[in-house]
Image (cartoon, rainbow, N blue to C red; front, side):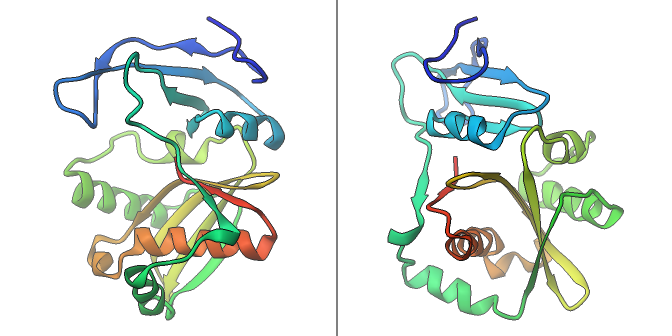
Length: 201
């Protein structure tokens, strides 16, 4: 266990495991479990390359490999390309609502359909621990067509920006590019809030 310079809690080295991204390689992860952390303290972790899954804050710590690079979008400098602009226009019929995260049967159903279609698996634990148990200030963005919920994005709030945690969406509407649209919406939301960054991991 060691203390990262300028980070507010102890982090632990993980254990070697097969890399999820590069076949034949071994990965390692540095992590910490936190019950609660202030937005300012969590922003220090984001700037050091950490991400969040439930109450676990983690980052790759693989010797000799730096292929996993955290992405931080500079909101004022971001310029969407042609495909992004097309995706933005195609989804202008959606309504978005920012709320405090709250798991409902409607969201559980959407999440399970997404996992089955996108990852060819059913997540028996559901999204509660992974997404809805948060040690930081979080917000949930609901995207709807009329009354139909078709996408949900979870973001964490830090002083200088937002951190995109996860987006899940209706597989029946996958042609809309809802994952891309959610990120574009979050960048625009940061701009409207006067925040400088969107952290994407």
